[in-house]
Amino acid sequence: MIHNLSYRAFVYSTESEEKVREAICTLLPTALPEKEVTEGYHNNPVIILHGKITKKREINDFLEKLRSLKPSVKKKILKELHNRMDDKGNLFLRFDKQCAYLGDLKMVEHGDALHLKLKIAAYPARKEIALEVAQKIFEE
Image (cartoon, rainbow, N blue to C red; front, top):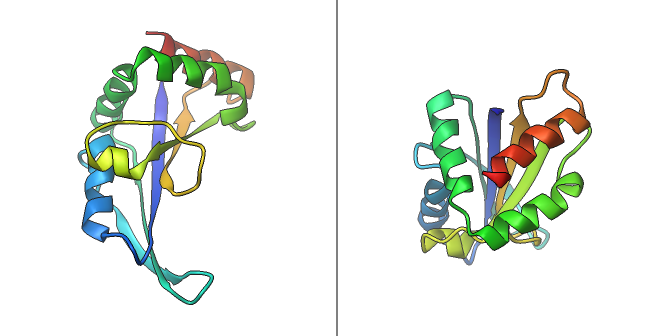
């Protein structure tokens, strides 16, 4: 259902890198994020933690987490599915960092989040087909 998933999270100077890593591990327990240091708007250091997961077992573990989301969250994703997917069949989701750190998966719209890009397995790789596959993930 998913070929691979990429993830990214920003660690601002007011945040703990270790806590953001733990938040990532709430979603993706086997994740080993790479670290990139850059500068923010006011020349403050910003760390970007990012990576990609391609192993089927790890992707299936993540799918189980998605399936265990609250029904109201899954319903919201289904309603917004068309807007959350690009023409290449990539599904974009954002989860609250603080909630993930505390073990809760809460979808958010703002940028200060755990960003996920799921490459949906669709043949041929078209949005319409990828939407059908993604719907099955959240309807189960």
